[in-house]
Image (cartoon, rainbow, N blue to C red):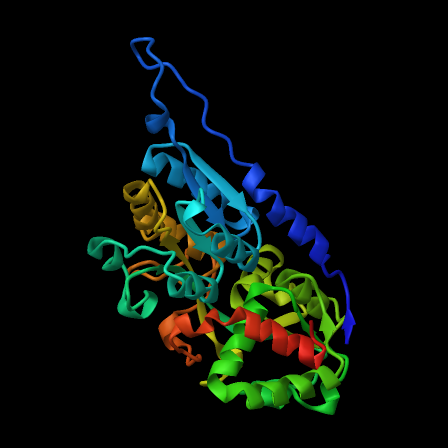
Length: 351
């Protein structure tokens, strides 16, 4: 396997190791009478965000205004933050976990680290977009897709990841091996096909010498530049590039597998409130904000994701409706076995 522009594991580990040191109490401010406010009043809402600051930073600034207290945000990789939360347990300073995918939320729920959300918050979205136990909700949804170069082998008839296991794609498939979305895809592969079936597909995939990149966006660029013929990414990377460049000016096209296949996984970003939080009421208010029409409009317009409430559609991107995509849907809590996924990827030489 060739890999290019992969972030060092040591750098990621160093980032997470520094998380515990980067929180500070908000400074006291005087109220209208000149009396300092109490530490309880100034206690910030602490959010661990596995979503990138460049994607959700502006929205979380609006969230701060909505909850009415200072918000302290710690950005890092979703899997790394989930591991951090599992290590911290009831000692965590975090009140809210904003995850890039469902697997990390499922792992925390399974460990008993998330508290049940209020019914009025849960009912803001449909049952298909929330944990059956009420411990987390989706905040936006996305679909796994293929992106392909105009000069690439024809992909119109590709309806399954199995169709990619062909010599014509040798050395010409891009993917992001350390990205949470790839990990979720492989976990879905394990859930849907079993360990043996997943290992067989991954072994054949690895034998085709796929090209690893740091991020989904870099995979898309590589496809658009003709560096590789096909890429495995989430749909919402393609649409902002198309909005910027014009779809007619792009060499990369998007292709939905349109089948009940692991490569057509419908996954989510989501949020859960930590059971150890001293700010549960405010954290619940933050979750409700992420499900508000304002936040949902932000997701569909700024990140080109699918909404998880009714009545919202993008004014920027022609993504269509999630209901029209025949993607793979499964209990997203089942995507919580990240360690087993990593072990399998190491075994077949893809990590």
